[in-house]
Every structure is written in structure tokens, then in C-alpha cells.
Length: 497
Image (cartoon, rainbow, N blue to C red):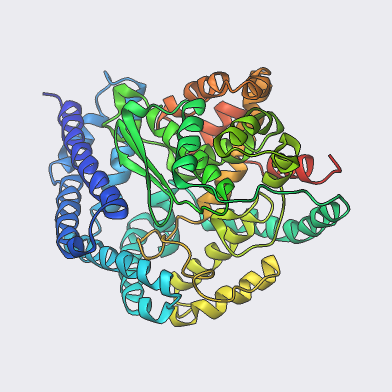
């Protein structure tokens, strides 16, 4: 066997192990009984250590240089080696005992978070979250020394390869300056309009699920390779060719769960569209979380909050719940889905206020990793930031700093990818519509094939063949540019239309 074939076979086995971890993580969040938590934590910790040991296998230090010198390799193989070397470089500096300790701390903290969130009791979560943070700082420092980066940028690099906080600071500072004034402008426009009625009533979970499943099918989700379930926090997970999504339901309001399903379906379409020939290799993985979030936000915000989609979906919503009257007309539903409101919950936020939620979390997690913000001061700092960026103060921690699972689950460095993803989504959707003018008219007919086909060719099917800037430039003609996102917001929300 050649050095490259040895490496490819080795990472195929790593992918199989990752698939097992993915299904156990999904079960942990959806179906696992509470009494199994300790045993599951032990199992996951062992699997994480085994995977870490395989990624840091000493043989790779010999295989990699030999494979990289092989002139017979094609473009995909060389891109695969680039990704493997990146993974190997950052993982070899993290000791196995630190991986195990972090995995156990995360499992314990996730379970504690569920109860703490329900009770709005940050103090009960603090000790376990402190341990997760301590270990994340250690991991960040170790990776940062290998990469020549600050600890936060090293953690960010796991989710956004090549991402740097200096660039994000500039993008987010620009948005933070733009958004408060623009939000006021939009709220003033809305106030001049007659009040828009909204659907009211009891919306049974079974009917909400049926509508969500139908709309997943419209978008192109492959139910032979996935499923829909319920969890405390919606997510997309599972394994290669077994892409599972979750949502949560409110019987007093079907509109939030539906958009949550469409958001997660965007993630799932990316996963289901990755190149099959490279599915079990690093080059076949999604290219970073800003691209991943762009695909969920493209579906939820760009496509499914368009007039075209709401016009198509409105009669199906009425049929699902037996609705009638002005609140169920397409125009009223579109106004509801594009209504801007200051609110406490990130996952329920509209397009205009959503980036402020993310900017707040990004600034807080950077400060906590740097040691500039003691974890015990997080609730107060959170509330101060909400007031400054959004003009509201959460009445309790359940609606404040306990609402997201990311920090308890070890996702430090993840949050900025949401707003990077929103900007990327606007840029990709704009490029897709310029390339294929029938995309929006087709969506109005319930036909997502033109959009998904373009995404398969330009985003999903490219895996990690290119770095993020290169992939975006090839797909849209330029690297990430916030101007396209701002133009989209002004067009949809800034006029009387």
C-alpha cells in the first residue's frame, strides 16, 4: 500500500468511530433515560479518547511527508492530505487525558444544564460549567501554542478553519454599529402599518410534526437517510448517511417549530449532499461551521421567509390546523414571519435582531476564555449586553444566559459562525438567484430542486476541497462581504413593502 492509501484507510476507520459517537450524542439529547447519564458519559469519553488516539497515531508523522511527496496524487487527494495535516497538527498537542476529562465534564454539564435551564438556576450549573471552561482554556492554550494563535482563535479554528477573531471583530463591530439604528428604523416602519393578526389557537404537536415533515420533503430532505425527533435544544446530528434533526414544539405557536425544522433541514441538506466518494474522509466533510450555518439560514431566512415560499405554504398551514380568517392569509403570515421584535431568545429571533444575540455571545465567550470575565459574573454581563445591543433585559437566567447549550457542551468558539453564516447565506442566495433566475419562482411553486441543485454543485458537493474564502469566491465571485447581507436586510425590512 502507498502512504496515501494507508492514511485514507486509517481515516475511514476514524469516520466509522465518529459515526458511532454521533448516534450516541443524538440519543443522549433525545431518548436516553436520565439514569443512563453516567454510563453514557463513560462510553463517550472512551470513544473520544480512542478517536483522539487514532488522529494522533505516531505513524502519521511518517505517512504524511511520504504521501505529500507523491506526485501521482490528484487534486482531491492533496486537499484531503491538507485537511488531515491540519487535524493532526492541532490534535497531537492535546493530551489524551485532557480529551477524556473534557468529554466527561461536558456530559455532566449538559445534563446539569437541562435542569438548571428548567429551574432558571445559574448557580446550580456554575461548578460544572466552570470545569468545562477550565478544560476548554487548557485545550485552547495547547492548540494555540502549536498554531501560533491566542487560545480563543485556536478554539475558533476548530469550527471555522482559518477564522481569526481580528477579522470577526471588524465585521461584528460594523454590524453592532449598524443594527441598533436600523432596528429602530424597521420598528418605526412596522408601527405605521395596521396591526397584523396572527394565528391563534391550540396547535397539536402531531399536526405540527406532520406539517414539518411535509415541508422537509418539499425542501428535498431524504427520509431514507435521516429522521425528525424532539430535543430540549434543536440540532442536526447523527452520522454519515444518517442525518438526524430535532425540534421543540409549543402548542400555542406552531410558527416557531416550523421554522426551526426548516432551519435544521438546511443543515441536513448540506450533510446529505456531501460528496459520497469522499464521505468518510476529512476532505468530504462540510467546510466549517460558517458554511454550515449559511445553509441552515439560507433555507430558513432567505428562502422560507420569502414571499414566494409563504404564498406556497400558507394554504398548507391552513389545512394542517383547520385555520381560517385574515390571520391565515399569505400576506398576514409573511408579515408575521418577517416581523422584527426585540426579544430574549436567540433561536426565535428575527433576521434583524439575530446578529446582536450572536455578537453578545461572541464578546462574552472571548472574555471568559481570556480570563477577563469571571464565570460567576456571566448573568450580569449578559443582561448588560442585552440592554446595550437589543434594548431588553431578561427577567431570569432561563431567558438569559442559560438558554443555549453551546457552552455546557464545550462549543466555545462556535457562536460567531452563526452571524458569519447569516452573511454568507445572503451572499450565496444572491449568487444562486443571479445564476438561476427561476429559483424564487420555483420556490413559489413548492419546487426547491433548482436551488438545491445549485447548492449541491457549488457548496455541498465540494466538501472541504477548498478553504472557505476560496469556496465562497468560486461560488459567488468574492470572499465574504457584509455589504450583501446589509443590502438584503434593507431590501426586505427597510421599506414600506
